[in-house]
Image 1: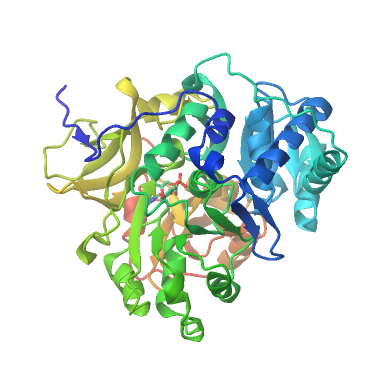
Image 2: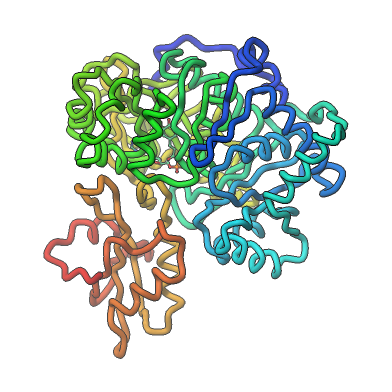
Length: 542
Ligand code: 4UU
C-alpha cells in the first residue's frame, strides 16, 4: 500500500525513558529553581513552591502505600474539582506505581460508577467537601465491593500532619519493571471515533513524551517564566498534560481555579499577571464580546499568549479577540489533540500571520501524519482532504479491555485514526475541516451520541432516537440535539427534561429535541447522522 507520510518541520527530539515521577524529579528547572511558586489557589491565594509540592508528593505516596495499599498496577480514581493538592495526588499515585483514572467532577453517580467499574478502580479519592460530589461518591462506591472511598481533604490533612510531625519516610518512586512505553500510567475516558466511553491506556512514556514534544515546540509558548491560567478541568487530557505536567515541570506558575467565571478570572489576570492562557473557543467568544473586558483594560499588559484547543476555532473569532485586546500584541494559536494522543499532535507557531488563525499549525516533533479516505483507509493524493491518521511516541497503548475498539482505531504500524477530516498545505499548516466520527464537543467536553441514544431508548415512550451536534455561533460550541420517534402520550419537552435530569451538565440536550417519524438509517442499521445534520426547518423544542 502506498503511503504519503507528512513529517513535522521540527527535528526529532530525544525523549525520556523512565517513569513519570522520575521524569518530574529530573526536571532541570526543578533543580535550578526549587523555591519558585508553581501552584497558587486563585480563591484563597494559598501557594506551593516546586520543592513543597514534591515534599507533599512524598508524604502522600508514603500514606497511599502504607494505609491504602496502592501498589504497582493499583488503579486509583480521582474525582475532584481543580485544586492545588490534586497535582501532588496524581504524582503520588504514580510514585507508588499505581494508575490514575481522573473522573470529570461534573459526573453524577451513574457515570462515576461506570468509570470506576470499567477501570476496575480499587480506591476512589473524592472531593467530598462539595456535597453533591460526596453523595455521588458514596452512592457509586456503595454498589462496588472492590472499591473504597477516601475523602480528598482527609488524605491531604493526614499527609500534611505527618510532614509536620517529621514523619513520612520519603522513599523513592517505584522502579518500573517493564519499559515505560508498556507501563500503564493513566486511564482517561474517551468515546474515540464511535460508541460509548472507553478507558484510554496512556503509558508513562506517552505522557513524558508529549510533555517534551509540547514544551520543545516553542519555549515562549511554554516558558518557565509563564503564569498559566489553570481553570480547564484537570480530569481532561488538555489540562492534564499542559498544566499538571508541562507547567509544573517547567516550574512555571499555575493559578488554579475550581471553576470558571469571567469577572474573577479577569481580576486574576491582573492580580497574578497571568501571561499564558489555555482556553477553549467559548471563552474566546467572551473575550471578544463581553463588556466586562472594558472594565479591566489592564489585562492587556499581562497576556502574552492565548491558546485555543479541544474544539474548532475560526479565523474570524481569533481575529476578533486580537482586535479586542489591541493595542497589545497578543499572540493567539491553536493546539490540536485528542485523549488517545496524550493529547497534542499539532501546535500553532507563535508568530504566525493572522491568516493562519483558523489552522491548527504544524505537527509537533516526533509525530508523523497521513490523510486517508475514511471509507477505504487508503491514502488520498497530496492536496486532498482526508481523515487524519497519526503516529508517534504519544499514541496510546489501546483501549482497556476492548480489543474491538482498539483494532478499529490503532492500525498496523502504530497509526491512530483520529476521526477528524483534515487537510495540509505545502507550507505544513494543517486545517481541521470536519469530523467523521460520532463525537459531539460541548465547550471542549466530549459528549458521546451513543450514550445519549442508549439512555433515550430506555424511556418506555421513546421508540427510536438519534443524537447529533448542531453548532451555535453565539456560544462558539456544538450542542447535542436529539431526534426522537415517540409513542403517544408523551411530549418532547418531557423527554428532554427527563434526559437533562439524568446526565452530567455538559451532556444535556442544549440543542433541543425534534420529533421525527423515523430515524434515517443505512441498510446495515447505522444512523445516517449527516441527513439529520442537514435537515432544515425543524420544530426544535427546548
Ligand atoms: C478542532 O480535546 C481534546 C484535547 C485537546 C487539546 C487541544 C489543544 C489538548 C491540548 C492542546 O494544546 O481531547 P478529546 O479527546 O476530548 O477530544 C478530541 C477531539 C479531536 O478529535 C477533535 O475532534 O477534539 C477535537 N479537537 C479539535 N477540533 C481538539 N482540538 C481541536 C482543534 N480544532 N484545535
